[in-house]
Image 1: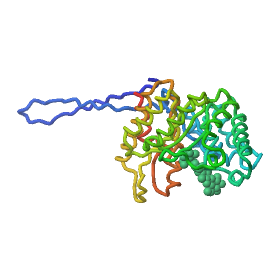
Image 2: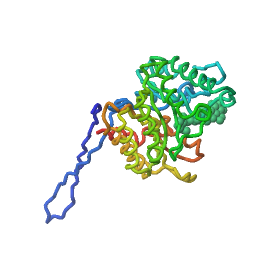
Image 3: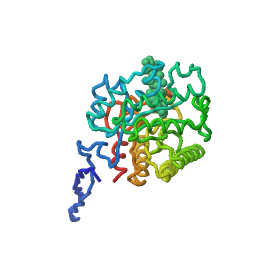
Image 4: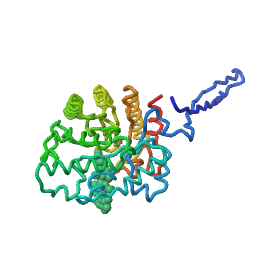
Length: 357
Ligand code: G3I
């Protein structure tokens, strides 16, 4: 264990009152109070612990930036490397946001995970409107991947090469990439990324692997197929946008079956919703905070049980409840992250540390 907890033992003496006829009894009540030393952070976890970071907040919010620097050992680019951000016009790349994140990470000794080279969402209009032959689409895919990976060669340690290629029922999503290039474009995307940076670790990343066995099976079949063909794939990203009442059994199955491939496993976008039913009147209570903490702890414990060499790390999606994508996306109150909207540590924070004890 790489961090120490300071255990303060408060001995409270209880003096029972008694009548003159009884002997006075003194009963010690021992109450252990676990205090996390201020210098222990998520950086001290026995595997990389990261967050996806937002370029605008890093630029404009010093408290956010300080928290990111203090707590995390790995940073994922939330939106800065998505197609529409980095390649908004044909032949025109804008690496500004990504470069700022990469420079911050390198200056502070943090690993950088690039998200994402290929997705069906966040595409610029020039791609969705692109007219061309199959060869033109192949060239578009290859050029994009190799330009972006090449730009950060030796700096970005790992990539979500392909993101969310499957539907929850395990069929291939009918994305523009599948329509134009067929499903085996996935294998070529990994090859193109590998050619551009042979040292980068390459992941297939998707959500729902804990709640859909059909989707999980499809993903495992894909990565096993890629492995057997010698395609350079090094890991599986389990996004794990989950909820406080998801069963531990489902979560553990997703983690252990991914690990059974022998690839590295990255819990790549962890957040735990407390209001999955969109209750507009819900408030954050001590009970919810405890349930939240318990689920964070069980996920960390299940993850820590896979072989060390396969523990690529855990990354939360966003940093605090104030910048989580969930309240905006679903127009509801929610508190999915280990830091509250005032950037204070929640019960879930200590639970993450406790998960590796
Ligand atoms: O930057 C523009 C801004 O100029 C404009 O005024 C505003 C108006 O809508 O939009 C801004 O862009 C938004 C962008 O986030 C930056 O805030 C987009 O509309 C919005 O769609 C985008 O949402 C992101 C979403 O992916 C789609 O790319 C979320 O921030 C991001 O957290 C989310 O992340 C995804 C992962 O990539 C994949 N897994 C699921 C995860 C959560 O949905």
